[in-house]
Image (cartoon, rainbow, N blue to C red):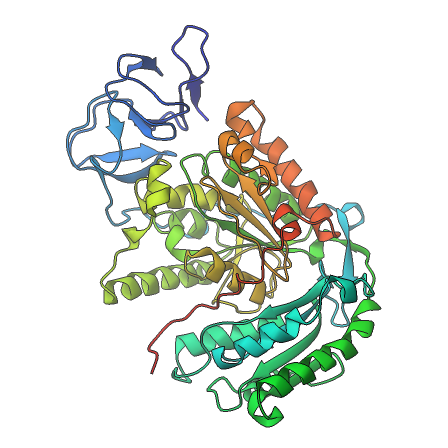
Length: 514
């Protein structure tokens, strides 16, 4: 941060400018007309987290924050004016994309010195951070059966299996009436495969209806999955109805439980961790505190051999040039630009705009355009080279920093990241999202201390201390990294302790429903 100052009378800081080139600053507290912030006389009432003009900005000129364009002035803006939706307009990104120029080799921690956690080693060499039995449904028609099977296992019965984290149902609202060669069908296939083979699942029961488009047998053939004691399938029509399916499914899970309980935690180095990076309910502080701190934690994980996965393609729009500059090679950069182009066409075809985001809550928190939101969102990716770009739910086969294409809608995005292999998630928020996920546990990072205090039962880390208490980004980033290791070893984050995660499995639906 370039400058943080008050009125010059010893009062608490009033505003922060993030870069010397910026033409706006962010109000640390509500500003009133007549006071002074950063040497500028305040002309309007400016809410906390909103922007203050530091210089005259003529109509049509770019407005700079993070030393980047966040939009153009839709009218002349005077120094000290409130800069927001009434005078700041979105425009398509004009940034020059210079591929690979900022990519740098990662400074890895020597293998013998890598951070470690206590995880569940699987036969394929991967390591889980949790030990679930998953009930996965192929179609909405079998969703009730899947939930009833999972709900048959209460705390008293599960107490006999202390090494099993639970029986979790992963049900959804699609699986039929979709073209077999469509993007939506492919998304669902990859998600089902990813959850079925996830390192956090010791056993899997797949439940179908029988006549649906998403045939379980075809999925198993496509991905080479073999049935066995800890991988079973069934369908309602073959079993003879819902009741019989639920009874038989519960019996199958009871057969799996003793085997799953044999798994015990053992030391593993951090190279076995794959972290989903997510932000939701963002505010103006997300890009100043929580996201940079998570970015530092991501760098620490990568230096220890692990993987960090950025997603939410619409929420990097206007900041993608920062990622293509970090790409390991031109092919990786081009893959990212191909996904951006797909999203531009997709939104246009449905009568939308890439600036449909930010949400009303984001705007109330001080974010005005998708460009401003994206520049802050990209900060959670850290500084390491971009090693790969993946489709939604596609298995991630490279370590380091990678990108997975997804919508900005948090449940859909994290569902894809988990399907791609993430066994941990970290979620920053400024407005107060209460998201949690299974089978990968999710920590919550607050961007401002006020919200962190108000929602203390939901926020694991208060990154707002970077502004409110003078903590450094590196200090909070180390705190996040250490917490991730503890959570990977079994410590429940607050969302998991409250039982979140049973309704946050939302595969991405794309295309016609027929």
